[in-house]
Image 1 (tube, helix red, strand yellow):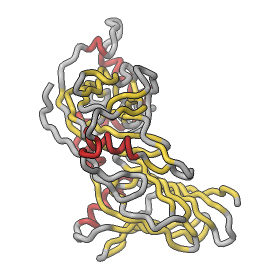
Image 2 (cartoon, one colour; image 1 turned 90 degrees about the vertical axis):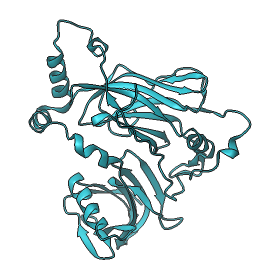
Image 3 (cartoon, helix red, strand yellow; image 1 turned 135 degrees about the vertical axis):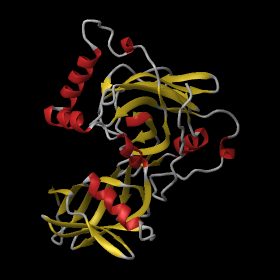
Image 4 (spheres, helix red, strand yellow; image 1 turned 135 degrees about the horizontal axis):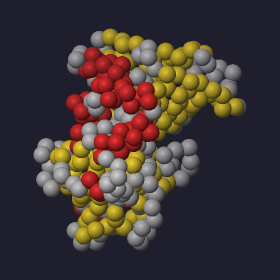
Length: 344
């Protein structure tokens, strides 16, 4: 199966301590490296998918099967099935062969994705510093994502961090419907409808039926822009977790150094900070998708980078958020903010 439109990207390093930069493959001469990892799968919560087949392959053939058969909409970049298989120590795959069924589109997709073997080998070997712990770990999951329009992403995950390593677009394919449901008593259209209704709920199902799946907007989730975060006001920031629309999760410790440049457009952040009285607080901020991408579009049109995501905290219940460039400030007014105490 050859992709109709194929595009592979190796995710660039951001300079944050949790994300190792790519280096020369020369460091790994002397035999194939093996690491302890398991495969998993994911799909956006709004668009249930069923993996028909997923195979992670190396030069000697099959390394691991991605767990298949389940209907899944656990979240983009999230760990799905956990299935022990094969030896604990495995080689790093060089290729991913996969096929899946998209319920929102009533369509099968499939193809083959070359993986950045040298980069993945280096990331496994380097590992990272575990957030909020004085120890190092490495990646323990390879996650395969199934998106709208044939888009697929591959991530490494471990200790709460997620790193995108590849993205590609695969073509529609013809697969026997019995691979999804081998029950002639249930019609395909009814199974698709009942699955979507059960997974999404009546309101979201009706909106999807009315508007259709937004195929043209899916590529923006993989978009990368250079931006920094500034926590201002009377808060003293301690740590930040950033979840990107592309499925990545990153961490930074403010108590050690100012944060570097992030690249995934932020979907959700968690910030721990100290109030003027010394109380330890937590702010969770979920960004409105349309507002956030619109703000980046407007700010980027000015041609200045990196941009600044400024989070002003004047009191526990008062948080103001804006995206700033050298030429202006765009208030983000539709963000969902929750704050709470973590004690002293």
